[in-house]
Amino acid sequence: MTSSTESFSQPQPQPQPHPFTTAAPPSGLPRMPAKQRMALSFRSLVSSVLGGGKADQPPAVTELFVKTDPKVDGEECLHDCDGCASKYPRGFKIETEDVLYGQIQAWSTHLLVGTGKTDWVRDVAEEKGSVMEAVEKADAPTNGKLMLSASNMPTPHDTDDYTEPTSLLLLPAFKLIRNAHPLHVPQLITQIINRAPTSTSPLVSTPLPASRPSPDPAAGIPDLSLTDCPHNAVIL
Image 1 (cartoon, rainbow, N blue to C red):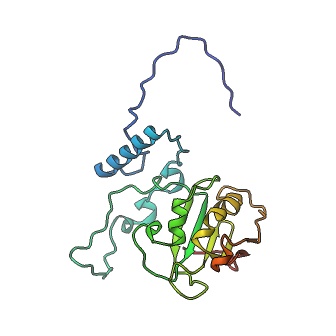
Image 2: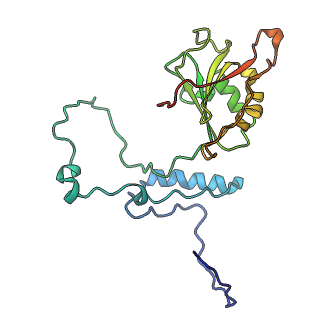
């Protein structure tokens, strides 16, 4: 139990951090390289200009991961595998300096869009005529950040033509949404995603509509239908 007391002494001025600097890494966390610190400083600048709120800070890396100890884990843990025979092209490079832990924004819901493809442009929201593009252009969900991903899930018509309806997987609701078309996206967000459980919701059943009407029946666009995902786990 904690308690607090009021102090009526003259408050002393406290040094304020510069709004465009990044905090020092917690103990045990590697120091970020200059290019990553510059990127984070720029992001902080944009956030301060746009009035973005401060997100909850992640726990220190030492709270989650026990640091390797050669006395316990053996000297081998300090060296690369000597028996590894993998060969890489001369120009192949692995980035080992950027600090990854604590830099990924949390998401509330995750929408995977079936495309029937295995390759996409770098930003899937730029796939012209796709559901992903429509989601990017629509109003954001009201229940938190939506992660949007393209998937190689087959489409109902076994085609990669974005003019044809496709299937979606909404997580963590574990709902399959069938017959999705870009014109469905506004009601998909307001009537389904906004009502769906998020990554921080209690583990209780959240009722969602079984279907949503077509936005344009005359154009042959079918109704949306929702069913439970037949899998208990999905590995992405």
